[in-house]
Image 1 (cartoon, rainbow, N blue to C red):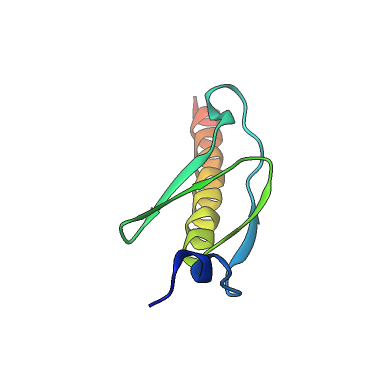
Image 2 (cartoon, one colour; image 1 turned 90 degrees about the vertical axis):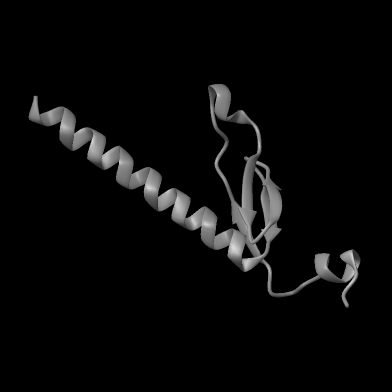
Length: 77
């Protein structure tokens, strides 16, 4: 069984960057995957497990989609 130190040195991890937020979005982002929680700081490049990187990529895609949808609905009125 791997120790925490061995897990932290995993070479399969990916480096991600989450842009700094404004207002209430200045803090860290919590990502929960398979019962484990990770806090990802904004404005820093950090290494995370691949499954956390995937969640963050999906998050960005959904935020972009939501913004496009919001703009398209506002143009109807």
